[in-house]
Image 1 (cartoon, chains in turn yellow, cyan):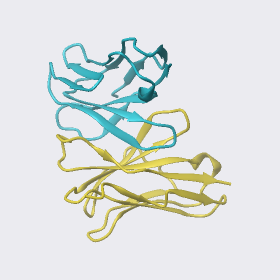
Image 2: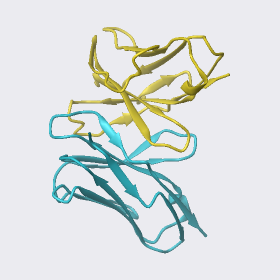
Image 3: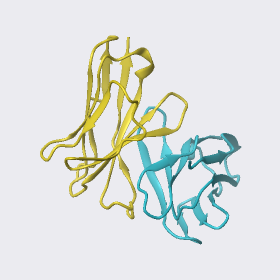
Image 4: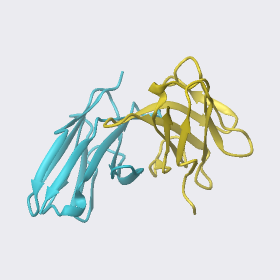
Length: 115
Length: 112
């Protein structure tokens, strides 16, 4: 079991470009969460998805950010027209069931730098 | 809104000593998780606590949950240098929610 796979590990974008972050959950997991971590801070919830559905996007900025988890393929977090303040580590987590009875498994993260 | 507070935020201790990290949360929850993060790395799951009175131990770390007091503790016994890392607690709100709310983290440094 390869665990939660995120790519790329590091991503550099110029201001105004688009960033696409990918997350493949653990095998058998159908619940995916995205979190953002600013330097020296804890993780902040962004969005919770199940296959083809956004369940809770209350932590997503209203503009420029979107997420999807298609029937086939990885979950994608998309940031349009990136700004310097978007620089952070973005972590994806997956769970087996909705209550996280076996915990939430985190990927290695994508570290986004906006220059 | 659920708030999760950890203390201390910074902890420097000597090898061989014992210490406790505290995690308080503001609303009803019966699920709490502890994670370890090394610099530049992802989060490693340490403990999953799913009921009041739950106690789990792994090596030099022991975690407990008191849902009535809305408090979890992470106790470190006879610390060693390899335990140096940042430790986060995370709570799920209520009994049917699913998103994690994290504390600010406790940065632990164990000095030889």
